[in-house]
Length: 369
Ligand SMILES: NC(=O)C1=CN([C@@H]2O[C@H](COP(=O)(O)OP(=O)(O)OC[C@H]3O[C@@H](n4cnc5c(N)ncnc54)[C@H](OP(=O)(O)O)[C@@H]3O)[C@@H](O)[C@H]2O)C=CC1
Ligand SMILES: N[C@@H](CC(=O)OP(=O)(O)O)C(=O)O
Image (tube, rainbow, N blue to C red; front, side, top):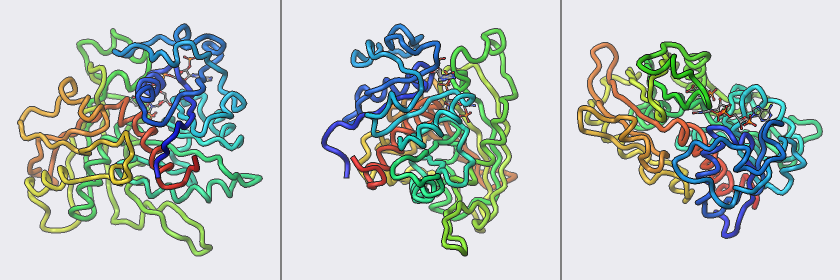
């Protein structure tokens, strides 16, 4: 059930690239209301409008302009039912753990806990069922937690590719191999990010740690949760048909929107035709939508027929940045099918995913409001 009254939320890393997206998206949310903001000691103590170097195309929402930025300490967020984190990974590990220990509920964009075997790594349009590991995460804490937990969302490029992969697996069974080449926007590196002299008139064929994250996170997200012999739950990345992935990551001079060229081979033979894949992608729908989550896209995947789409400048705002756009679905002469996917790295690749994850957790009663 979704609430019919306001739910107070906090934003950690509120001054950053992802934090600013949280603030913009939450300003129009039907039940989440921003009650507390946190950032580094550099920003703490200042009204938000003075602390932030605002880079959005909409003005700073009036409700947060004068809100004083707090240090990222749990005592300043005790009123918040949910805390969204857009913290720099160097700070996120300790801060998010302290918030969880203080019985706060954290939805994080940072990479720190994605590999934790008791923390769900959730792309809300793909695997919200992984929320079921939360009781075990709470029980592990000493003393066991009654309320607090951490949920992470995925790396932005992982998120973009895993949505069409999940749609294809749902329709045609396991994917056996997958080769991904990314063209990633500058905003993925935060602010000020990549120096203009490195990226204007250029492509940088390396993003530290990115290829490993895509290759590993995809397996956790598409994998299931099984019960072990001692009755515990565990993520099961290997029981599924083995999926071999190879990613190559590039930074390109685009502001927002990650484009990925993907080739796949299916385990089942004969493989589906390009037309069958197009139909399956367009028909894919999410639990978030059936639960009535207000930030879920009405259409998860838009399938372009034009030969030159998707393009970041034209397609990154599809469904307010919450849906993904696929195009050029065609036969691959080496694997089975190849296509291009575009996702908005700061929306469904970051803030929007956290917000939908929290909406799902409320709708499913994982969070009591
Ligand atoms: N940009 C993207 O597309 C995506 C980013 N992510 C992840 O989201 C997180 C945020 O990324 P992004 O917004 O790009 O990063 P930014 O560098 O733009 O923002 C970082 C934020 O963290 C705060 N911060 C830094 N150090 C500390 C500290 N010691 N204590 C408290 N707060 C601190 C900063 O506050 P202050 O302003 O005061 O310094 C700022 O609010 C990262 O973990 C990133 O990997 C995930 C998916 C996509
Ligand atoms: N590394 C991504 C963004 C990011 O911050 O990823 P992660 O949250 O996995 O560290 C990019 O540069 O586009």
